Length: 124
Length: 185
Image 1 (cartoon, rainbow over the protein chains, first blue to last red):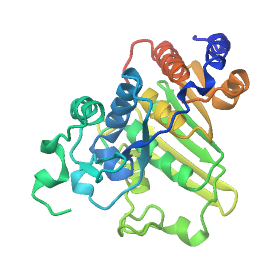
Image 2: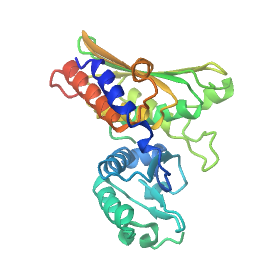
Image 3: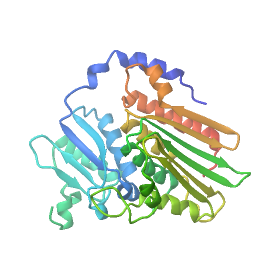
Image 4: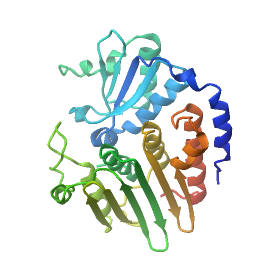
């Protein structure tokens, strides 16, 4: 069984850099995690975003969850808000698409138009 | 319909979070001899009134305003009952809610348990203000994860700090594997 002893070491390591992560989180990634989202596969999407944001050191990005926004047929839905820009809503997401969105939208500032709700032909 | 029980558990636990719970206890117990899989989700949230409780498994009842259906608890109940198992929910206003679902382990209609580690990790990492106790038992082997216990060791370091997340993931995976002994439930 994996023990709790390792946590002590993590604590000691982390305490030296506690404030390092407290930058301004101005970019928001919000994943729908209501029944509809979860049933459509939102859990791996949420996990992919949070792992990739961490891996790529995107310290200004916060990844959070939300409930049902009423567009269940388009779940998993991910909304991304960058300061000074219009909110972008991505639909029918999966972990692979999440990777693309992190690399293009979050890291290069290029919206992945193919996955947005506008691409579905439905008005906003 | 959910594709695995761990997703039902994640979904039903969201209700506990919305109920303002400070402590959520989740247990999964597999008993091969008794041919059963039992899931319990207990919280100390705001609970429900008698009227709400009576309607909670009705898919056309919800307290939410965005739409008029509430499928989470209904799905979980259905998943249990279609195996020949049972479903109980008890709640007291102001005290909390207890959900217990029993599945017939060998039933062909039982959904796979799925990735419980991801469910528990997601709950812990995205709700650092709530304490979770997760207990997983397969026959005689079991382990318990308690965030309160981890918090005691970590002092001021948050449960969503990257190194801690990685540790929690490893802790869940290793200990689950040890209980499962290579079998997929």
